[in-house]
Amino acid sequence: MSLRNWDSEHPADAVDLTRVGAHVGLLERYGGAQPAVLAEILTQAYNLGAQSAVIEYRYIDADYRNEHARFYSTTFRRYPSVAHRLHFFAQPIPAELSSAERAARFADRGYLGYTVVRPIPAAPVGRTMLAPPAHLARYVTSLVTDTVNLLGERLTVRAAPFVAQDAQLAVCAHATLWMIGYYHHLAVGAPRLLPGQISDAVPAGIGRGTPSIGLTRYQMSAAANALGFPALVYGLRPPPPGESLQRLACRYLNSGLPVIVGGAGHAFVLVGYQRHGDGEGERIRFIRHDDEVGPYQLVENFQFDDYAPWHLLLAPLPPKVYLAGEDAEVIGQAYVLQALEDGDDDDCRAIVAGYRGEPRTVSFQATVLRSNKFKLDLERRGVPDTLAGIYRRMPMSRWIWVVEAVDRELRKAEQPCVLAEAILDATDHIRDVRALAWRVPSLVMRWNPDTDMNLRTDLEPVRLLDTVAQAVT
Amino acid sequence: MAATIPAMGKPGRYALTQYVHEIRGSVEAEEQSHGEVLSPERLRDVVDRLRDLDEARQQAEADSRDYLLS
Picture 1 (cartoon, rainbow over the protein chains, first blue to last red):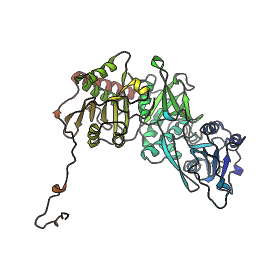
Picture 2 (picture 1 turned 180 degrees about the vertical axis):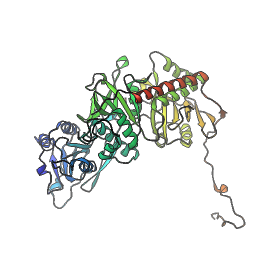
Picture 3 (picture 1 turned 60 degrees about the vertical axis):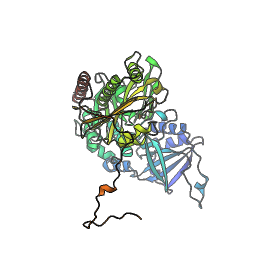
């Protein structure tokens, strides 16, 4: 990476990625001393069908500018204060790009995303929003929409935020917090967090904070609290009784919330998962952002992973989600099972038999989502008008846990699979277990927290519904 | 002719309630009840389970094994 040529007379250049040598040329120009992550990003862009790229020069990137102000402006070696941004497109370079009369348009060129290149040979890859690989896209649950302005034109990309550590101001642990923060910024409107803010949020530990040599779980947890996405901390050796890594992580991934995992001295972010195999051989393949390797890495078997054993899980949550996922599942499951066992019809008895039988054909899953989204999606999920009307008119907390009893085979076949559900207030008190509503095939119950009254409404039998979970199995 | 609302303080003032239409569902609750829904045994199981999970989380946060993640 030659920083002498970092500035350009032009605002941007276009690269024909179909020409032999284009990939190598970009790596030679931007790979620096640590080209591996950039190489992975370029490979993924090519696999997405990228035929062209636009290099945006003199790009004032908020993240890199902040890193530069906080650290790189203090070193003997000089670094430019501006970055380059590479945009990838599925279509070839527009002919108008070389026209002096007409402006080139990019909106219909199949925008695939971007990566910010830092002028730091040791750490070139900055903020990256690249669409997931085609074979994994449906399993990535932590997708958010980002918007860029490229030469006056507005482009959007749906991706899971990625960044590589710069290994000075931020190591992997900081990078995971940045990825979580950028996700929350785009998903729920949380404030945007810059690398310096993340570094400042980490409480002092033993040794220097900058350059950083790593963070402890205490420091990561404290930083997540200070940054506005307080995290539940789970030890995985062993996991909580009755729980497993898969159950803990997938609850939050089903909710679209990325989680942080620590193992072998490294931290990374899980952004989705895929169920693989059948019956006893079924296992979960997680999809992770590894800031030392690249985005969307498929973990075939976490037990034999390079970073095994995974010993720590942090689940950063929106501030108004007080109830942990495993607690919500216990409470919601209890309400649904109680109603099923009290029910005097074949539908209820069949669901209970599926849950209690061997092999188990019915299981429970918990998902946290905003109640507004829950209400908006009722029609799309196939909820009958009567039940939808009841749910729509119910006052609900901003965030709710929805605990669903699902048919496992139908879930695996990506068919409507929800047999019953309970809705819980995500801010409710753990010592007074309540559900706001719980439904079995022919009955819905609601609890009014203001009057402490339970209201029962009989329904025409409700058949299978689509799940609220974001994961596709 | 559209109805008009007389000015406040003048004779014939109408309460707002006369112009409000309640939003009701087409299906009313058939039954209302008060009290615990879960059976005593099930509630006890839930409480025990929640306590176990809470203790596990406390243990995780207090774990003295503190690895550096870098």
